[in-house]
Length: 316
Image (tube, rainbow, N blue to C red; front, side, top):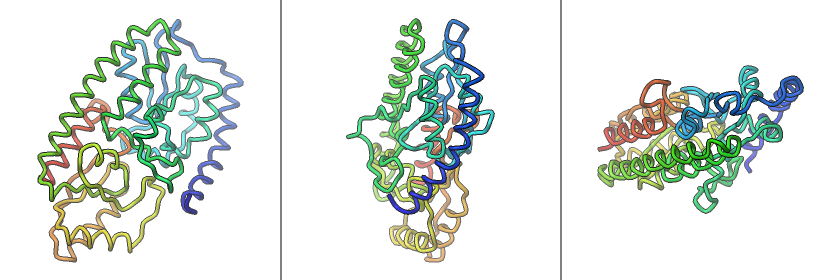
């Protein structure tokens, strides 16, 4: 692990120590939250992607609360006191895992000793993960960008719900089967759309390295200013080197992300144009968070479609 990621990990651990005290104190007072006999299963999920999977599988038997809304960076997220209350009251806690929620790691580990908890992305077999030795969790956590891999997470959500609510097995299995079929169709649709981009233009340039699984699944080269974690730093040399590569290859567009300050990408665009290449800003992509609730981008499938349509429009 690099010194930068070691520092990031230490910051997360120190921050979590205080939160653990709050969690422990709350558990001493609250007891176990009400189960299915009291109504819907109370599910608390970290990211929008995980929460959306829980809603699709849980249906009417689950009441799902997501902690991280639009524009929230899970790498840097620290739970509020209200979030801790939601964790304490849940029948089931769902999170991505693979160290995506780095600054919540200790809190989630502690909660797993008190509540049914599942790190759904860790259901993806190791041989299908992308290794990232310089990242805190050793694997790239952004598995949802390969729709075929996100199916493993959906199955993990199904199994976790059955564990806490066995009487709902039939409902959860039926909902999951329907949703998994929808994801199969979405995966094929995304492959076809990306394949429509001319091969020489099939390069995705973003702010941080969140699209590795996307590139592998849909045959598009990926470049980024920052590493897998948004805590990774980048400097003038990184901008200069990437700007030179983009200008030389005449890549048509670069993209910003909803969860990251666009300053770095704007500097990159300026550097590319200084080299005589008329680069375009391709648009804004959803990387580590969904869009606003009530919009198509506020769902996992809608977010995936929006991203791919934005990429195709800019590069085609």
